[in-house]
Image (tube, rainbow, N blue to C red; front, side, top):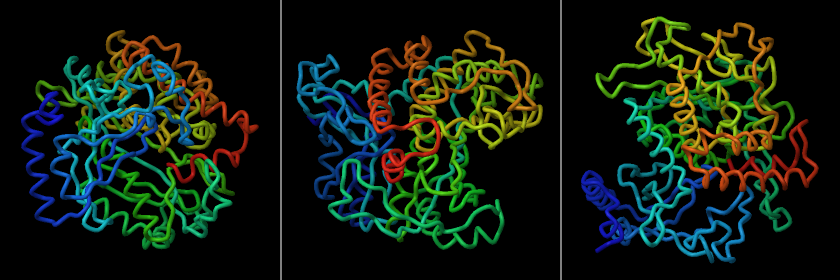
Length: 483
């Protein structure tokens, strides 16, 4: 029996989908298949397999080293993996052994930018068949299961800002290959400061076109592409999707954008605030609502405050109550906290209002509007989407269970007295470690694991002399080309 069969890892539907994948591989005469999984940072890691062996590896899985789960954003291993228990107190994580990537055949795509190449997103298991407890895709799946038990499905739409530059110097000399390497040299494609003008859009259209076409060819629900205020800053928005689909879209969108851009002489960066002159911070706004599993209606539609139902208000109350701890997931880099500034169209405190772009959570939709939803503006585009969305679900579920009141709307967001968002990653990680709700739902072991990795990243930043002021060279080298 294969690894998948022996451990019962696929549903009947996935078995059917796997057969369909094999047919597509043959029909399209594909030569390579990429198997990949999203690591703790939301970065895709994987192996590329020749198509002749792909059918067997769909069933047997593809091995990877467990040390990939022990790395920070510089790809430095921050756990003593060659000691007993590997620093995790888990035999499976000891000694740099193997884990197994098992493809989810529902995620198969033929890549339009890589010749004769297919792509599969995977879940990860230990060689004994046990799920790896640090799998962020599985963490979101567990959150969705908890939400379903409460009677709801999660609907999420993506609004993602990023920077797109002309690549001037990729920094490929041996001297530049430090660890982490020197960030590439780039130049803007637009001067910026003309928000949503046709002139600026046309200037960047030639660079956006291959990305747009690639995204469309992958079947992602692209809705719009826009030019933002800052130099070389763009935004893509996507129609809402249920469950895992929205997070999977974000993972593939970031990878596709970076790869297509590079093949066309550009560099796309989802780093929040690159360390280059005159650039603006980028955010990732997560539009979200709950769909009733019975009846299929939008559970947020109502006539109470802000046009929300009681369910919507309590879910909103949960998002605000747990915003400080959730920031470790919504804003997981040192750099992202330099976006939380007053009077900048970014939030700096846990408040809400109807259709106000200065608050953390914006309520959209008129009373009775079936499209009523919450727009959480707190996230950075480098966030791991599985952890970002799981944090929203668990915070919202706590809001429902405790009937949390979000308080009055804040029409003057930067003057309203309210709990401030964390000033830095260290404060967010401290709040995460102390959060009873997140420790219970994510699991204490995962919270401590994640915090340990991020604290190692923070320690390197501090040792380099980093602070809370301007963006440092350390941040730029660390994040600019990674995300």
